[in-house]
Image (cartoon, rainbow over all chains, first blue to last red; front, side, top):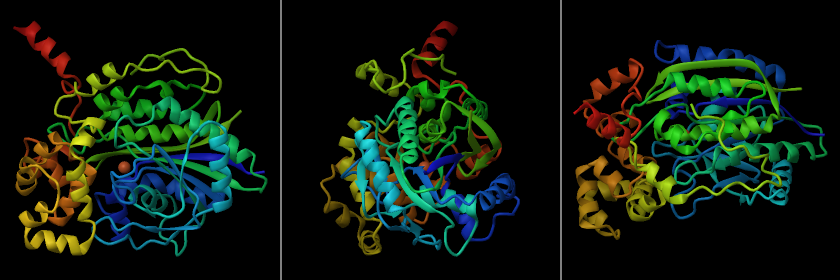
Length: 280
Length: 157
Ligand SMILES: [Fe+2]
């Protein structure tokens, strides 16, 4: 049977992809950020996940305002890196796991989550930057990916509670897939940042770290944080952190902390990273 | 941080108490210096954002650069929106329903980094903004609520 063995949370700031692509990951600015991912890169090499359910959001790359799906799952065979206005990142294509993706999609719909199904799309920095952070610069990504795109741009975005519940449903779906697969779930985006208006540049290390605390152990307090609190405390784009709750929900009632990292700033954004595993 | 919130069971089988949409939307307007991308803004700014999205294509960028006003005239935009786009007045564009992820196509078309473009929406120069970020960013203190700030200033008077 397939099983979710671990969860990873990570920011997905586009500038991190630029740093990787331009070989700047150990300079004075980026060094401290990337050092916090060294543990994870080694751990991933040992863990060798078969598939990653990668929760992220599209940033006006694959989707424009014509159609705004709240939760969408990629069921395709492969995805190309998107051209975000300066040419596509020179990273490997992303290989899907169509069998597992379709199984999860069907299971979620039967479990009352009305998913949008995507067969073809390009994937932007929201998905490829976390791959670079966790896997470095291989010739091919070492795991297959099930992209799960969340609307965190047009309000109302899904509630934290709904995201957590979706994670729980994903875990049930994975557990009923007959093939023996080591599946991880990654929640990406955040942490605190605001990219617009006179309040742009807001960061909140104290709040971000309390959020990280709330992902560990038995508490489910994070699922009840209302949108307005993310907005007030972590900036208008900090709302991306609801995507981490899909990851956390999928890990079950209790988690154990394997690794944690926090750094300010990367461009406009606070970098947060956590690795968790389900605990009994 | 929030208190533990409504005490309802897991989603399966339980009914979530429906949030009051009017209170929800009113709160989104209560944050200083912030334009939350609500449905109302998404509706108002639809053509601004779709115009910006069109700049993802190199041929459109070339045509836009060659004659910006003519390119904008191909879109069902108000004169106010066209003016704000030509002036790169991003705060004004946010008020008209522009969203930063779409407007960022215009930043890139202009060869501006995200951070530099973002700094134009603040009262800082780009070097000042960059220094603020290097020093830990903008604090949320006094930046959380317009109503709370108003109440505090009335008390002070
Ligand atoms: Fe993002």
